[in-house]
Amino acid sequence: MRRGVQKSVQVDPSLIEHPVFHLGYAKQILGEIPMDIKQDLSAEDFKLVFNTPLAAATLVAASSGGGFDMIKELTSASQFMASEAKKGGESGYGELVDSLLAAILGMSKDEGKTLEMQYEKSQDPKAMIAQVRQTVVNGWAVVAALPGADGFAKWVLDVARAAALAKTGGHFGFGNKSEIDAQEQAALDDLAGIMVVPAA
Image 1 (cartoon, rainbow, N blue to C red):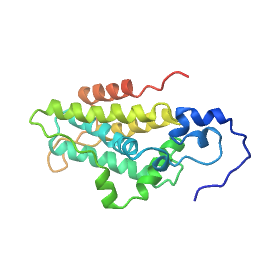
Image 2 (image 1 turned 45 degrees about the horizontal axis):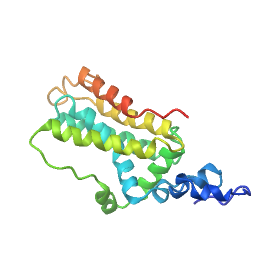
Image 3 (image 1 turned 30 degrees about the horizontal axis):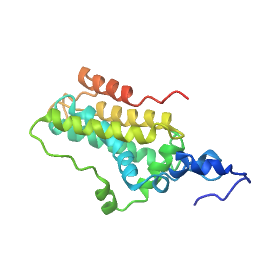
Image 4 (image 1 turned 90 degrees about the vertical axis):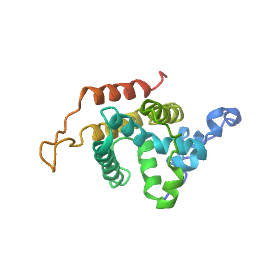
C-alpha cells in the first residue's frame, strides 16, 4: 500500500516544465511518496528495466559456452532474484530495486511473458549476444539518472554473478565447478563498465 503525503511541499511551477517531472519522478524528489517504478516509467522503459537483470545474466552465461550449463546458470540467477524478492522491500539494494521486485511479484505469468524481450534470431552466437548486451545498455540508459541507480547496478551485477557461480560442468553431479572463469569475469567487467552512475 502506498503511503500518503508525508509533508506539505510548495512546488515551484517551473519544476513542471522540467523533463524529470514528465518521467514521474518529481514526487520522489519531493519526498512525498515511495517509488512505484511500474507506474513511473513508460511501458517501453519499464520493459527494458524488467529485462535488464536476466539479460545481464544471459550475457555472462553465454560467455563461456552456453548449452546445458547456460540453463543451470540462468536458473541460478532467477533463484537469486526470487530470494531477493521474498525479502519484501528489504533487499538492501535500495528503493529502486525493491520497487522493481515488488512489481515482478505482483505480475501474473501471462503479464511476465508479454514483457519478455524478443530477440531477432540469428545463426551467429555473437549477434545474439550483441542483442542481449544492447538490452542491458538500453535498460541502464533508463535507470542511470534515477534515484537508487547505484543500488540497481550492484544488484544486476550480483544477479549476473549468481549465474557465473552456478555449479556447471561434470557428469551426473560429479565434477561440477562453481568458479568464475576468465570469460565470465570478462563479461562481468563489461557489465560493470556499462553500468556506471553519472557524476552529479
